Each structure stands twice: as C-alpha cells, then as structure tokens.
Image 1 (tube, one colour):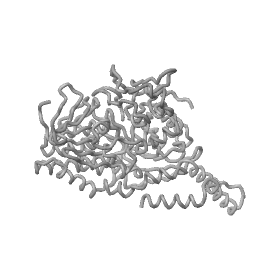
Image 2 (tube, chains in turn purple, cyan; image 1 turned 30 degrees about the vertical axis):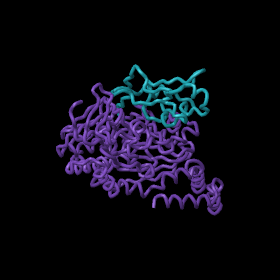
Image 3 (tube, chains in turn purple, brown; image 1 turned 135 degrees about the vertical axis):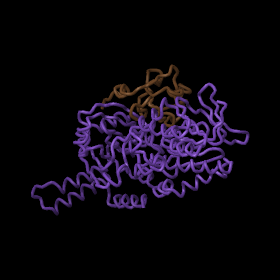
Image 4 (tube, helix red, strand yellow; image 1 turned 90 degrees about the vertical axis):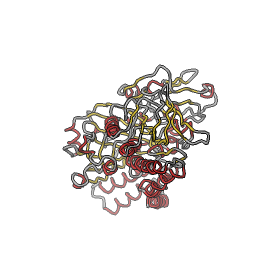
Length: 434
Length: 93
C-alpha cells in the first residue's frame, strides 16, 4: 500500500479497537489490521467485559446495540474437591440497577465485530484477513510501519500500536517483547454449551437478561496451577478450564480430557445437563503478572492489552486492562502527533500514564500472586480434600459429641498438611494480595 | 478417560489452507533427541500424533493457541499464523 497512515494498529481486539475509536474520533488517520476474516473470529476469553471501561470509549454502548449476553448480578467462587464443593456467592440488588453492566458477558465473534464497527463509524479503516508478518524499520531501527502477508503488503505509519494478543509470533520474530515462556501463560480451553434461555434462568436463579459468573478452583485442575469457570450467556453457558502450560507439559494432562472430566463433576453436571456443545476453543491467559510486563514502548511503537501481558489473575480481569491500555496508548499517540515526535522520548509518557492508572497499580500490587500459586500446590491437591472433609465432619449429625467432631475436622486438614504449612499458606496468601 | 477431540473440533468452523502453517524444523530431533515429546499432550486440538516412525502434524484442526511453539523443548516447531482469513473461525468466541 502506498498510502501512509498516522497510526497502524495490529489486532482488532479490545485494546486495538479502543485506541482506534479514540484516534479516529480525533481525526487521526488510523488503520487496523486484523488477521481474522472478521474481528473476533480469532479471539477468545472467559467471557466477561466491564461496562465502566467500555464507557470510557463508547459512553452510550448499551443504547448502541452492544451485543450483551447477560448482565452479571451474582458472582460465585467455588472450591471443588473430587466429590464436593464449597461455594461463596455474592448477589446484590445494586447490580440490577445502579451498577448495571458493571460486568457482563459477551461472545467475542459478535462483540469485537460490533466494537470495530464503532471505530469504523468514527473514521478508522479496518482491514481484515491480513497477517502482520514483520515490522518495518528505518536505518536507525525505528519502527516506521508493518509488513503484511498481502501482495502489496508494506504499510507505512508514523506510529504502530501492537495489540496483537498474547500469542504473538510477531513478538517472537521481532523481539518487540520477549517470547512467552511456558511458565508464564495458562492454556485454557472453553466449550460453549447451548441451553434454552429459560433453563439457564431457572438453574441459575436469574431472569430478564441477568446472569451469573462462577469461578472454580480446587483439584479440578488435577493438581496443576489453574482455574476453571462457568459463565452464563443468553442461550448458552461458557465452561472453561486452564492451567499453567509448563504444568500441562510436566503432568502430561490433555486439556480436552480435563474439561470433559470437569463436566462430570457433581457440582457442575446438573448445571449443564442436557446442553448441546456448540463450540470448542483454546487460548492463553498471560498470567505471569507484573514481572512479565515488557517495556511498553520504543521508537515508533507502543504495546497494549494481552500483547503487553496485562492480566490480573486474582480478579480475572483482562479485557478492561486491554481497553484502558488501548485508551492510554491513544492519548499518548495524540500527544506525540502534537509534538510531531514518535521517538521513545515522547512515547515514554505512555509508560507514565500506565503507572499512574489502575492497570499497572493493580498488577504491581498483586505481583507476588503468581508465585504464591506456583509455590502452594496444596491449593490444587490436598487443601480442597482436607477442607471438604473438615466441613463434612462438622455437618455430619449422628449423636457424636461436637468436641470429637471438631477434633476430627482439624485432623482432616492436619492429616493432609502440617500446621506450619497451613500457617505458611495463610501468611503467603495475605502477603501476595495485600 | 477417553475423549475424542475430533468430536469437539467438529463443532468448530475452519477455513483450511492448502499449505500447513506448522512445520517440524528437523523431524530427526523429534524422534531422536526429544524424550518428552510434550506436543503429543499439551496441544488442545491434538494436532501432533505419534506415528511409527515420525510425528504427524494435522494442522487442519489447529486452534492457534501457540502452545506447541513455546512448549517444544527444542524449539523445533516453525509456527506461523495461517494466512489472513484462513484457519479457525470462531462462531461465538
């Protein structure tokens, strides 16, 4: 392509499109390159978006036919052993009213297409079915555009925003950020399971487009550092499970067998009973945390979203970090255009913006969380069994004195891990999130 | 537990390119030096299958997660995205 753009954005996901919306609205000549046939055709996540982050880009998204599946009014956290589950549920009337769409589920094939349409309506150019294969650099090594797999594929731009996701062969090739290590990503698989809307409403105790998220921990990941989830969509539920990629390699567990096993769990199977599998997907989660976030800018380029490893594993937030980073990258690009300088000296203000925002503040706060999970395998092995056995002791009524029961409950845990180990776990958990 | 991943992949839509986007750089390494062969386990689409004398690459069902690229202990997999518009096409996502 002969035409020169102000900004080229690699990837039409939440980060790239957020930036495109803001830039196009301000009259910047922006092109978005997407490798899929349509935005969202390659994208996958658990399923939750956050309204307050989307509002910063599209203030009236709910009135603009944003393809919301369900508004989340209830969040569940379940801790599963092989045959039991311990759950914590929070439902609040506020999520029906003044906090409506605080969190909501979407399918990416629909949402990303809708979101990209908003950018196009503002003047951004979207080019699909195009893989960015390399970065164009000038003699001094500054990024001055991208190479694509199209015949006339070189495209020049004053600045490039890399929002190409966590799996980036482009990063591996060009080194704009280090190639991911297996220990720093979780491999997750997800299955869409179709159910009639009223069946979902009944099973989850919701109605009128409201829904539930359920995060699931325990030994469902077969001792591996991982997590599962069950989210409600309008006419389907998303069941997913993931674990650290190096754990998969070490344990020789097949991801599709693990999700099949999860479907049979007594706490899960009644919720998906009679459902029809509709789609099966796989994707990484950049769960390495703060330590794996690369330098976010260089001469002529910026990095946002999953591509920058922005993911808050503790709060399962990622899409909001992508949108916020895309927005901050766009603000930085506007500043650089004003100065007509796209060197790292100007673009470093993106780094400052990110540090001052919740994005890096949160990742920094929870920087010890990834290693906490890594070093406390009992969370995924003996603790769920012990906790379950302890509660079972307390709840069994057979005229045994409570003193005996309580001792047995303590023994159920202590028989599986020492008191010292338990104290260590509690201390490390506190330290990792404080 | 026996699960056929083919039944799951059958749910997905693919626009299959004639040429593979995945290639074993040196097949000798797979059958000689590689003891672990994690590609046979970690791939969520079971793209890599052990045949008698080699590992076959069934790229048609690749879900494009990238796990084999970084999971191969010998970095022996040449991994590209399928050409623009090819590969898996999410219906829901």
